[in-house]
Length: 128
Image: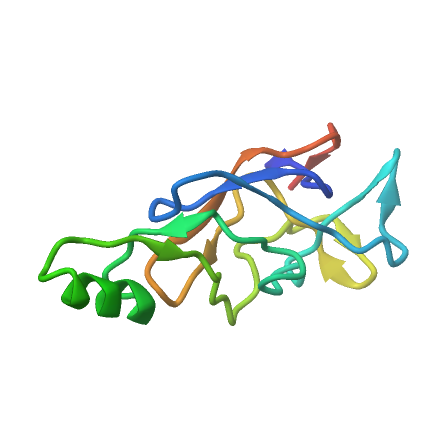
């Protein structure tokens, strides 16, 4: 059980240097004023915007910059690399046929970060 997530929710990544905001396209998902999110709102640079700079050594651009700096960890611009839906979604609420996103959902970036929510946004609906 958790809070439903909507557009404008604040996300964090342990390797990002700043929070990011979830963008949800309003295709039949409006609750109150902002669109509600589903587990499929996971598209990099569409739904999941960059977390400013990335500090993860597994990120190829960070690794290359670190080698060029003679081993000194060198952050590079964050480009989220997400290929799987958010998990878990709501077990009881669907939006457009997809499980609703909850504030306990997580998304894995291929560079190593686990993206989580720090604020669910405007929605105050409880979802299971």
